Image (cartoon, rainbow, N blue to C red; front, side, top):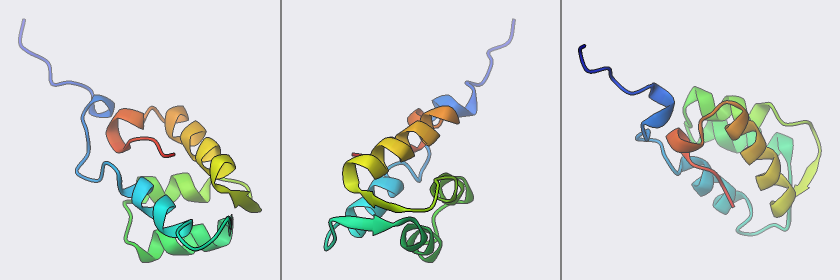
Amino acid sequence: MPDRKPLSNFERSEDYGLLQQLVDALYADSECVRRLDAVTAAKASDLPEDLVEIVESLPPGDYYRADWCEQLNSAINGHAWGQVYGTVN
């Protein structure tokens, strides 16, 4: 039986950790961030389409860091991309 290549959601992407960098940048000077500002920042940062999709999938509103990270991680895990892109804190 030939060796099978691992499924793509098991391989770490070159973009692993980029979403954490976005979170760190958004909350560097602010305690609360609007979803719209996060979407704008994600697009301006040239994040991969998958990660922009994660940010865009969250409901509109204002988020404290812990709530934002919980929502992002839920969406990341829902796509089984935690191993690929990493989770955020």
